[in-house]
Amino acid sequence: MATRSTRATFQALGILVALAGVLAVAEVRAQPVGVETIANYMGADRQRILEAGARREGSLLLYTTGTQTRPLIDRFQQKYPYLKVELVRAGSTDVARKVLEEYQAGYEKVDAFELASHGLVLPRDENVLQPFQSPELAAFNPDAIEPKRHWVVVRESYTGIGLNTKLVPSDKAPRTYQDLLDPQWKGRMALSGSSTTPINWVGTMVIVHGVDFVRKLGAQNIRVYNVTGRALANLMISGEVMLSPTIYNSHVAESAKKGAPLAWFSPGLVPVTDSGVAIARKAPHPHAAMLLIDFLASKEGGRLWEEIGYDSPRRDMAAGQPVQKLYLTNRPNYLAEYDDWAKLYQDVFVRRRF
Image (tube, rainbow, N blue to C red; front, side, top):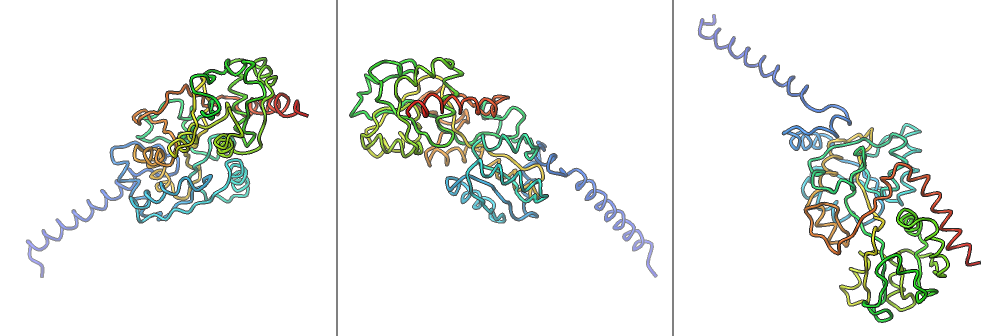
């Protein structure tokens, strides 16, 4: 028969077990539940909760544009070795179309995105993206954050005036958009006709100086090369192209370090070519997705972006040549404006050549 002391001990243990159960239930109920809650949780225990959830999830699927993210993904997996990151790579427009088709078919496997922001506009408008919060956002230029926090830009570069310094001495180079109208540059400039580059450049000209200014530029007989910005910079290195207002600062910086005779100038407000990170509204692994977003937006991530040739919009990162930035995709009617700019580009710079 149990003694009074033994019975008291069992009762005390029972109370402790019950209390532990109550506390466990309370803790579970206190944890963020659902993608929206997890993506916006900012409690003091946020990091602990994200890591605990990510350990349970074990993996995540990232839709991205190319191989540029590989060094950052490798470092992320060093920090969180229990997470397997699967990458699906394609152009931003192709990814946008792919994820819309997947969501319409009920295939909801993607967790996060690292895409040019123009590729995130349609997924946002079709309610595929989940607005989120992160402690890292406080360090960012507000213009780098989509107005409703559907994405944050983590890497960027800018198109400005690039030139071959052997053909155009830097002290005689055009420094503003207005300078491009000087008769001495007629027939001596080129544009990259690849992807969104020339259209966003035309849009910037419309916003800054108006449609008539774009038509005046067209009268300068600017050649259009249907090549990427990188390829156009290579043509500038070889001397085939003397001057272009659609050269990326990152390409010039990379080549100039290797001794190429290139220089770059910011002629005023410049269009930002960027890549933003976002979380899917129905992400199967939301804890892991938010850990990745935090990392890609972190100062450590910013340094890694700089190492591979990009600028960071973080305010606590060392800046290169000062630029006045224009984040076109933040404009409320960007897609409609883009169509108008594309037509203007075709009329002024493409069709008039034939």
